[in-house]
Length: 209
Image (cartoon, rainbow, N blue to C red; front, side, top):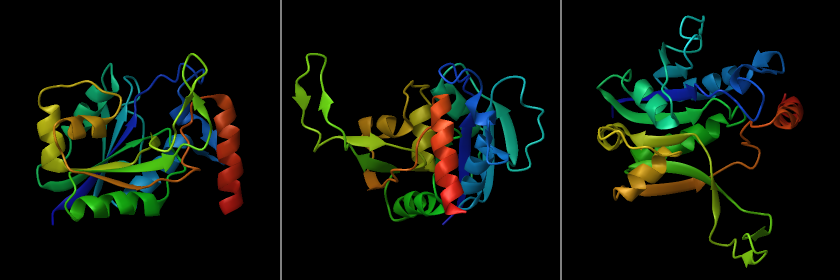
């Protein structure tokens, strides 16, 4: 079936957080350590993509550390270049999502191994949503997209060969006609964006230990 490799993207500056959120402490560890462990649980190898200046940091949770680019897509491509040619599945995960479970990683990988080009965890929108005029938007057809996202390695390489730009790799594959499989996301799989998110993550992780 080929190997599974993970790319953990940790090259962001964290402007809204006020610093590099992926290095913030979370229950005695860094945010990215939780993400690396979860990625490792389903992977034969892990590539960590970091900002310039962190490439020489000791990162025992990663097999390869590489400097990212100016955009998320450039960072994913930098990580993808380090994935062995023989890999069958590539999982892309944001380091700032430290609460994603092993089960969620497993579900996305299994979906690709079953024939999907890309597997994406999604969660329903539970709040009322309005447009800029205050008109309610039908939320029944809306979904919140999360990571980890798993891809058939050859498909992801082909998509990134033309150096496209997007905030989400799955959307690039779908736009090119790839076979999408949505799997059930996790409501607690929050993305650390602001300082208060760290408080929530601590409460959730503390309750599961």
